[in-house]
Amino acid sequence: MSEPGALWGEPLCRALRRRVGRALGRYSMIAEGDRVVVGLSGGKDSLLLLHALSDLRRRSPVRFDLAACTVALTGMDVSLLRDYCAVRDVPYTALEHPMMEIIESRGERSPCSFCANMRRGLLSSWARDNGFNRLALGHSLDDAVETFFMNLFRAGRARSFQPVAHMTRTDITVIRPLVASPEAAIVDEVRRLGLPVLETVCPFAGGTERQRVKELLEGLRRDVADLFGNVVNALENLSDVDRWTSAAGDETTEDVR
Picture (cartoon, one colour):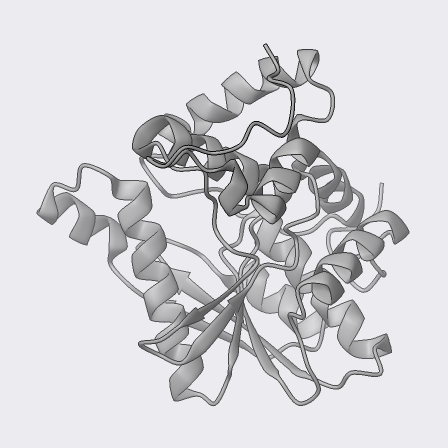
């Protein structure tokens, strides 16, 4: 068995490299001279994202700067993240923030949503203040599809987060290079590389609405093999002709029952 950290310097596997490259190109995520900071939570997705982008920085003809930043919750030990970033030659910053205490004091009914928005705001403000113009987040294909169904069930909206989104308040562009990468492949690669995934200190982990949707989709995928691909296709191709409106429309295709 290899020593901890022995494979941190190894390149990403070819299959995930292709998926990340496809997402970067399809959605024009990184251009010459961009300064990119990865929101490094210590979870598997953000670690894999940093691995992928640090690989890309070494071999891509498109030159860009890369750094990592963690919003460190109370009691979070980031020493392994700092060590990992040193191996990958990526400057690292940890922002200490009492997120859980704020959530408890406010009695937040949607702690996960509040935490995600707060962390994104803190990271984008740090990026702006330190001269970065891109914030890379580790949302995967599974996250995108789960968000689609959460919006459908909770709000009646056929939408998910965008692969690329501009934050007007800070003038930072959020990019999600793992948006074409399935969670199962990410898990396998994180294990192969022995990346230093941190134990969560969040008291809300495991019992969230997202976890319930994830379990529901596991069952659906047994019957609909390309469920995730179909959702992505719908997100990319939703048009006015598919929307229900108050005006009468033409029936151009046979109804599927």
